[in-house]
Image (cartoon, rainbow over all chains, first blue to last red):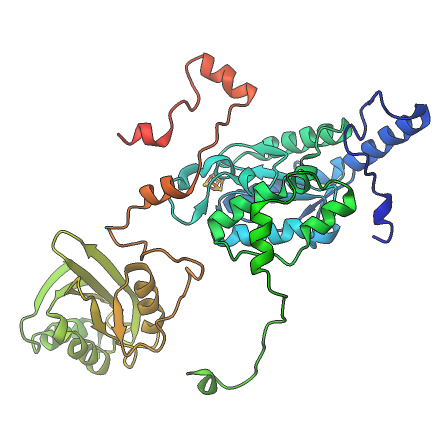
Length: 243
Length: 185
Ligand code: SF4
């Protein structure tokens, strides 16, 4: 990603016939770019809940997602789509947010399963986060408990369509209204919550920092933020480690 | 020793403990109720003299009305192939019991788990630290007096999820139209 600066920053109507686009060539080029982007999606291979069981059949021979240009990818930095496949425990949610923040924009979040919409059958569970898009901007929900591979494929095709027409730009919302998302995260994880990512810096970089990027919650974050330190690792016998 | 001769021997052994109640729940299941003080003696006896080397689980039940915890020790013998379930009752407050870690090593995990989920403390257990709920600050969630639903109502929001296809289904009388608090009245 040496050319981060070349990721288009003109925020609204990236493609899709924005009348303000400067001239025909730019528009054609933007459309081509959006089309290519929608046809080469890497999804992060990080399965969070039981809904992930529907992904192997969606990926393998019967439904074969790869023919749509969708492939699993192992690291967040190479991925475009973050699939949140099912219930999200609060513990997992922290990891999901860390992962999401590491992905480079443009990035898309798909919430698979009823559990991501409203907690599903884990509504009464103290450990399950309910409404996913309070903590992350979700582009698309695929409801069902669990959704069939057909539904997953349909959802993917819908996302591709949204990307092609420039409608899938919720990731910008994370930068624009970071304070809102951070506030919800802090409500759940406590006010000392922090991630290693400098989201505000990234928002500036993308040119997306707005009035709601910073606010009371980010101020709170700055108060508590401690520099990250490597985890201590010690080798020794079991006996030594006992207090 | 044949398998047939071991099972009667087991019952004979169990008679050695005072105040014990034995019920056969099936050909291979024996339920034993006894006082909490005598449980370590029973386990020692079973392990030392009847080949019960496998503590497969410790279960905890919260009897809130009686202000008691029930602990069930599930023991399995590979020789007699009879499952022994030893039930004891403890006062819920202060909720302290002895660890059986010195007899059965796996007890460390079961006890740690019960400590975390029910708040029952085991004296002599090697580690009573956080186990699964490493990021949980609330009360022990498996206790009956922990109101999970109230906690959820307190901490989480409900989102109106009305995609167009759902509206069509609802127009025909289907779909999700009730919120959980309405259902639970
Ligand atoms: S909606 Fe159903 S299948 Fe999906 S994560 Fe929840 S319980 Fe599992």
